[in-house]
Length: 178
Image (cartoon, rainbow, N blue to C red):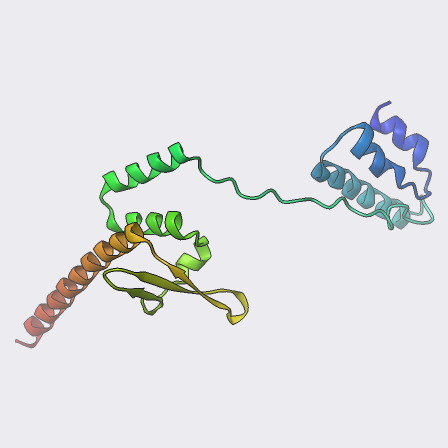
């Protein structure tokens, strides 16, 4: 029996929650598909009520199917090694530091983006990041040797570039005054 015949036989402007069960069990549809069907029916019956074709909306009490969001998929070891090798070969110290932090700390992208230099505590043997989460919650995340080394290398290049940029600005300012 196709959907049209089933609907004609079941929906005569009276509530019928079995359509949802039919889609889930007989048709073995996924939750998103069932919800799309229910949404279409709801819109149709809203129109039917508005046009006077139906006295009440039979889909008012139909509940949508709860959708479970799958956990994000992690890279397997081989893919992770390839990614790390590729980034290290690029010799872009910023990208290396970002990837090493992700791989070795498990930070979320938003947490990494929100980091400030003051949130970083580095010493020769240890390091940590202060992460600010939702609702003013804070946690300390330790840095392993690889993450510390990549951060130190990037920060050194950043400091050097910043110093050179400041010198160039000062030279320009002196040239204007003279």
